[in-house]
Amino acid sequence: MLVSDLSLLLSLAQQMSVFLVIAYLLSKTPAFLPLTNLSPRLPNTLTIYCLFSGFCILGTYFGLAIDDAIANTRAVGAVLGGIFGGPVLGVLVGFTGGMHRYSMGGFTDLACAISTTLEGLVGGLFHLWIRRRSHHNEHLFSPSIAFIATFLAEVMQMGLILSIAKPFEQALDLVGKIALPMIVANAIGAALFMMMIRDRRRLYDKFSSHSSAKALNLAQRMVGVFHFGFRQQDAVRIANIIHEETGVSAVAITDTKQILAFTGLASDHHQAGLPISSQQTYQAIRENRVVFADGVEEPYQCSGSDKCPLGSSLVVPIRGRENEVIGTVKLYESKRRLFLHINRALGEGIAKVIAEQLRDSQLQQQQQLLTEAELKLARAQINPHFLFNALNTISAVVKKDASSARELIADLALFLRINLKRNHQASLLSSELEHVNAYLHIEQVRFADRLVIKQHIAEHFLSLELPTFTLQPLVENAIKHGTAHLLETGEITIYSRHHNGLNQIVVEDNAGLYQKPKQASTEGLGLHIVDTRLRNAFGVNYALQIECEPGQYTRVIVSIPQETKQ
Image (cartoon, rainbow, N blue to C red; front, side, top):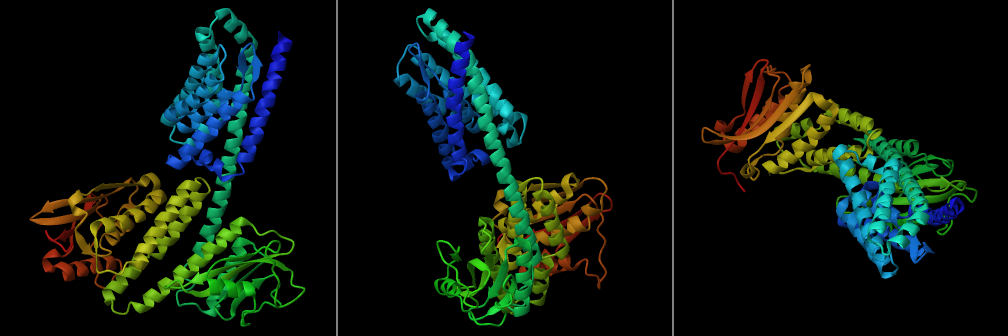
């Protein structure tokens, strides 16, 4: 009996080895990504369903025929489908695998169909239990959880075979032969499968964190370099930054006619000031697209020297305001190195950052019709201390939680984009709140549990118009000169109300530290500009109001007419 169990266990182990090889090969394809991020989107859900239903069916096909039944590894697909997708998806995967097994007949066909469906449900129940017990998806990737869930599911299957399959004597004999090998093989196989997925996920997160950190360093160092336009001295600075951060063999920046900057390998014959001679560069400019010469399928040949050590190049066009090409960023690798995919992605991102900076520079130069107060306000929004604090916060978070870091980068990009691009005199309250929330999300991560944000805005207020950049300076002032000085938890509340026949938006903090600034002080510049713009837009009766109870609260009140331009 022991020899028979061992023989069957080895056969099932061989089946599981085939599964793991297939899983390993799939882990190298995009089809494996839904298993690493557990996104609830329909395409990802369908991918998980098809993948694990396929494992169920293959488990049946690869199974061994024993006494008009099949010893198999089908349970791995059903249980893992439930763990990754939840009860509904688990049942669907199990039902698909069960119906396939039922179509093959045998005296255990009905029992196996029911048990496979229930195995998917078992995995789904573990999914719910883990999600309710912990908010971190990481626990779903535990090999021990996969082992326990599959172990219990297989024990349940043996019980259902004894309960449903007829005759009972034949079912009992079958269970005696297959129970131990199937329970052990499936449980261990599920744990190994989960271990592979977990390791792949960690590798992906580590790679993403590294990429995010590199992109963050690049963005942080490049901020403001092209403030005065596409100048050669600025191009040299950018080329050096890119070379240091990416680690490629060489970097060049060109306009549409000549090389503005070159740094790295082969700088003896690739020099700033020389006219463009590379066919790849001309092609990128002419066709307005990325051109990659890997030196293998697409040959790279230096036009300056036959002995040039560079073997591959990536040319990314820099686009201006009307999407026209105004220059290129070129990354090179030597003949002894491969061009990494991350550097290709970074090259395209770098060109977009440069183009965005140049467009913003051109926009600022053309906005000559704005009033002095509005120009001061626009500059006041981009507080250098806030920007550096935000970048430092993201830099700290990216080491611990790549997903949260990406969200913070998106919030910072949204905040900066609104600051730099909004050129209308007025905006909807909903847009102002979007701006404020991007700012507050970064500040909340920075101050952690020392800052609590509350918002109570009536829905019909969202369509009201008020001068652009009204709320964010008030919220920033409440934090910078209010809650940031508290030892206890600071609280910022933004709410709407009707008062004395007026629509009002109130920004309130619990510090109560407001002091009327001196005339020459710059601390009250933001409040002064907001007050001026409110008076100009709505009249003197709508001036900014400030109420303060020392040590208790400071309320800054924005009044809006009952009817504003929609």
